[in-house]
Amino acid sequence: MNSAHTTLVQKLAGQAIAADVVIATAESCTGGLISAALTDIAGSSAFFDRAFITYSNDAKMELLGVTDETLSEQGAVSGATVAQMAQGALVRSNATLAVAVSGVAGPDGGTDSKPVGTVWIAWASDRNAYTRHFLFAGDRASVREQTVTEALRGLIRCIETEAI
Figure 1 (cartoon, rainbow, N blue to C red):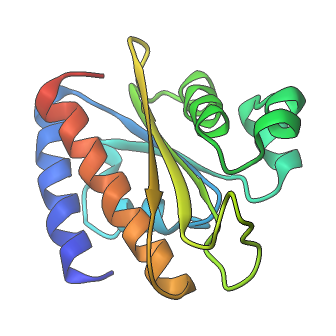
Figure 2 (cartoon, one colour; figure 1 turned 135 degrees about the horizontal axis):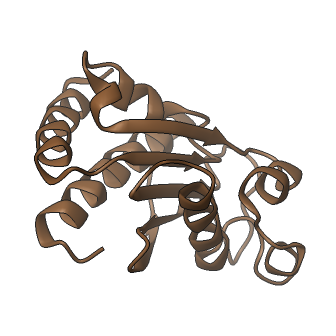
């Protein structure tokens, strides 16, 4: 894990434990990198419940309850999809806070409307949900690392602000 992620996870762990928050992840473009970062520190079972790696649309529908309509109308890389992914992770876990990501990490797969580097992230609790769009620069590894960083930062903000 990179040192920036270690620092973020250590901060997140302390906040989550203090606030009695349990986290779940729903990952597409990161393929488990967020959950790996969360579990790279000892004691992560105190704040981390489970991860859903839903790379395919079928997995998003079967494991998280993303609707075929959302995928057909909005696409896998959309605010609506990550919102449903995050809500699905909450419903199918013991978590109180979930993060979901979907994006075009590249080097292929980009379009005019969703170029390489396009990523949507959602954070959700039983009270609220928030989505955010990002356009990251760099190669596949860089896009995925930036996605992990922003997902972790968002989890920290959710706990700090109690907005979610």
